[in-house]
Length: 240
Image (cartoon, rainbow, N blue to C red; front, side, top):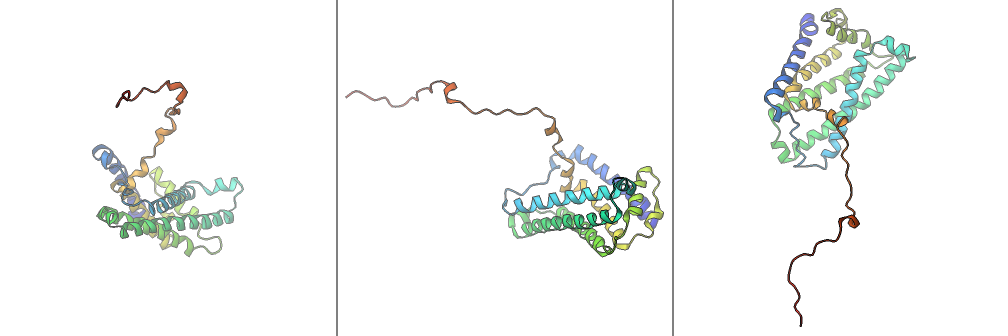
């Protein structure tokens, strides 16, 4: 089971992610979209969507730093393990709360607005279940092991995650990991595998080209430079 979960499943996840992105880009480019429902309702969406997207962005950055920035790097910057733990605990919890609040509002909107609910597919429902489960389980695992300096996942989960890129998974690192963190990792891998096959695929469609395209220059019309306006044709007055 250890080999299956931590030595095989990560590569299956990566294969599904890459294969799904290639397939979607090649055969379903017009479906590569969030299928926005803003036309049906925008007031609540304008609150829920930014909360969710900003929250999930900070959650993602926190995971990338925690998994792929070695402890020796933060030590060299003068950041102690206790300081890192506090930042991870409070910063991660705050980002998680904002994310959960955003997705809760999105689900409320989707369930209570009839046109939006009718546009919800089975695929969407599965995506929401896995997404919420991954976020909530991550918060539960973090808070359940928050006493003292908390659980030091940078000595176990992080080295295992980095070892995957060398094609030599360090399975021993995952043997003593708390069950809640293991469940969170498995759900997280399931979510990554689902990304290309759901509306979450739009996360790979960042408008990077806008950073490099030429500026669009807009100029206001100056009435003095337009010359006299032509007379409109119409009824002409007749002399009395």
